[in-house]
Length: 279
Image (tube, rainbow, N blue to C red):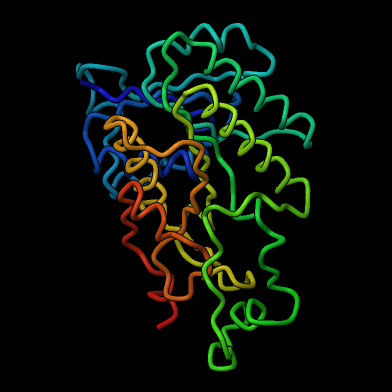
């Protein structure tokens, strides 16, 4: 049985990481990716990381890797017509300002939830949905962490809870909070839905040392895939708690977010640590 997976924005940084790493966790994943025409594929040239390419899958059951060029906001009927038959939908795309982004989020969730048998939908949030909970640019423990002045911290702050409601401070965070609100609505309808509060995911899988505090929020693409795989596995087994918004962070020594909750609830198993790059 194939795990037919629709990636809305699958050529981007996170989507390409899912296409590379999920098949290594279970070979049954089959991908269809919807992207804007001309969107670059960030998975190109990275076959050595374990990606099973389209040619290698020829003739296998289920949906082989397919790419569809489409602006779903311009072709909503076409988008709705192709949604049947997927087991997992991962919503990664972004476009426009806050209003345009929220309209696209409405379209995605309304269309998926209108199906007779909705698949698990993973909606992209971000650590920036809770920016007001930590402020690297102010004083206190978080500022010291961001500056890597660990010896000056008298009391390490408790991990920012996975149960913390969104508390954004800008439009980027507000669009993510809107996704989280939709995840809660989906759960109220009895549908499987999860918000992934992505950390610092980048194509090179390296902490960006110039960015203040990045090592504390860094997430390797393999760990991002591990979260999606854990959530989908829990969903298939009827064990995914409703309306969760988990932080997707690697197992960093100086992490500030609660990743223990998804470890305990769905078996999230991150394998990477940003400190590897600071030795």
